[in-house]
Length: 449
Image (cartoon, rainbow, N blue to C red; front, side, top):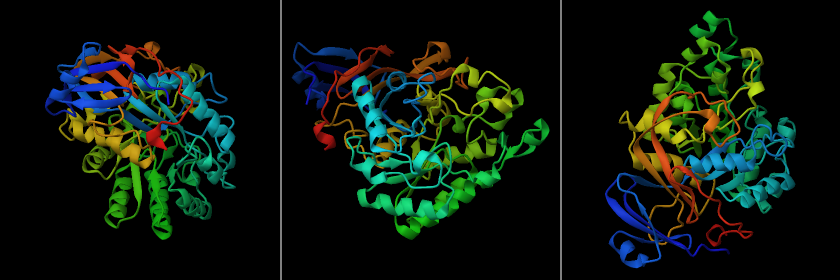
C-alpha cells in the first residue's frame, strides 16, 4: 500500500467540539493525540495552527449523485469528489442512476476505479436494486457485492421499488453479505404529475400536489417487510412528520431500519415555491414548517440516523426553464456542513459530537466502511476535517467545484467553513482551498480488507 511519509501536526484544535488538543498524523494514521503529539512530531512535521477550529472525523455521505458514466455534462466522479473534499467529506456513496445504470459488476467497478484514480475522497458505488431502475427484475446484487467495488448499499434512488414482492426478495437477498436496501419512498400512483408538496400552497399555485402519504405508505410497508425477513432497510431523504412517526414506531420495536434527512429538508419549506424558481424543485418536495421541525427533532433524538446530501447536480438548461419542465434536485456537498450548523447546532438541538455521529460515524456504519467514521484517537485512520465554526460565507454557485449551479442557497450567508480536509492522512484541502488528491493507490487499504 502506498503511504504518505509526511508528518502533520495539528495544533490546538477542539476535538469534536471539546477541549483543545494536538493531533499528529504520520503515514495516514493518527500517531498521537494531546501532549505526546508535539513531542513526537519532530522538526520535519508540517504544523497547522488550529486554534479556534474544531477537529471532526471526515464526513461520509450515503447519498451522492455523481452522474458518471453517461451524464458527464452534469457531474463527474472527479468534479463531485472535489466538491465533497471541499465540503469536509472523506467518503461518498455514488447513487446508481447513471447511464448506463450501475446495475452490474462492470459498471460499479468503473465508478470505483474512477474514484480511486481521482483520489480526493473514498468513492463507494451504490448498486441498483433492479435492472435499469425499471422495477421489474432484481439486478446482480451478489455480483456487485463480490466485485472489487465491494458494494454493500443498493438503491433505485430516483424511483421507488414499488413492487412489494420484489422489495421483499431484495431485502432477503442482501442478508447473505450484510447489505442494505436504501429505499426512495414514493408511491408512484399517488405522485403522478406531482410538482410540489400537496397542501394549501399547491392549491393556491395551481400545481399538482405531492401528498405526504405517498412517502409514508411506502415506509410503513417496508419497515414491516424488513421486520418480516429480519433484514436491513435504509430510508432515503425522509421529508414528513408522519414518516418520522413511523420510523419511531419501527425502531421502538427493534426493526432494523435507519434513515436519512437532507440539509435542505432541515431548513427550507414549500413557501419558497411561491417564487416559481425551479431551483426549489426537488424530490421529495420541500414540505411545511411543521415537517421541518419534526425532522430536526428526529435527527436530534436519533430517530433519523444520518445526514445525506442527495447532491443532485444538473446542467443549467435543465433548471433554468419553466417549473413544470425543470429537473428535480439540488446540489449539497459544499453547503451541507454549514446548513446543518445553522439548522441544528446554532438552534441548540445538536452539538458537534452529535453532528459527527450523524455525518460520519452512523453513515460509515450503515455503509460498512471500516476506515471511515472512526474516532480521532491514536492508531485510527487519519480522515479528519477542520472546521471554523465562527466563519461566515456567502454561497456563490459559480465558484463551486461541482458542475451543478442549482444550489437553493445561492446568495445566502451561512455559518461555518471547512478549512482543511485530510483523506488517509493527505491534505486534500488546505486553508479552505483544494490542495492535491491522494497519490493513486491501486490497492485496497489494509483496514478495509
